[in-house]
Image (cartoon, rainbow, N blue to C red; front, side, top):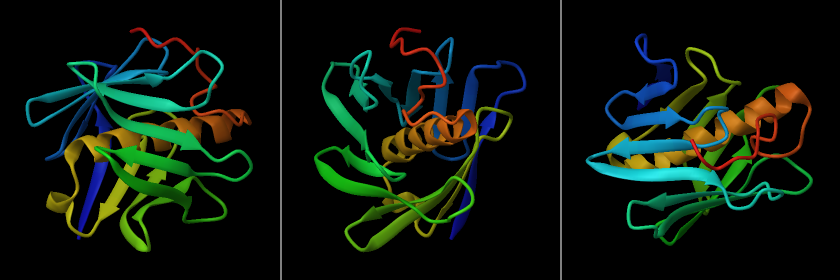
Length: 165
């Protein structure tokens, strides 16, 4: 079992790293990011101005991941490289989510709005989870936590809905 934290760089305010996994470079208002791991790179942002969904595309423009939030309760459906996952609440009083594939929980993520350590991840087998999936899910959970703080129901809606950096 490993405990990981998305941690802001001391030297660069918009750069966050997840030890042994990769990094997230957050866009100007936090509504988009670039994820990097194992010499791969993904662009994360909203799919449309008024939609709450998020999408990760690789350098060739191919969609690698998608998140569609639930309309009534917290969490939602997540896809990564053609595989389906669920991001479901794992606690009633804070922004804690379980990333699951079917009935199997792959990771527990505790999120809060941006800061020095916005997401903590507990994972049984970190090497068994795609680094891009972990980074994408960390970005999603951070957005859900920011929405909870602002009282807004949209993923990352507390920030501008731009998809450019």
